[in-house]
Length: 88
Image 1 (cartoon, rainbow, N blue to C red):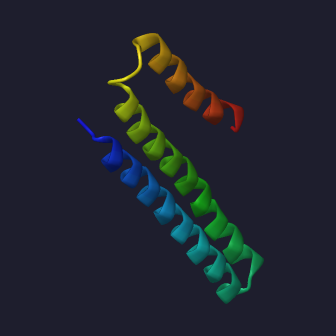
Image 2 (image 1 turned 90 degrees about the horizontal axis):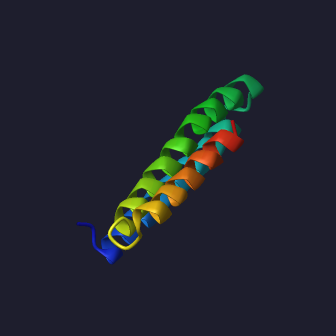
């Protein structure tokens, strides 16, 4: 079972990693100075963002799974799914 602090730290570290990747990508876009390169870098970021969202949500849902009833946990998981569906 994941403790509260461990879950929060994991979620925060994943978000910090995502932020570091975003900053690095922005710097690479500036370094290369070409629209083509910037679009390629942006495409990679488009893949990384949903992966981080899924991982952070999974960690949070795993932690909440011991505290929430199954119907509420299902509604919460459905909310994450709807975010993906709505942004596609």
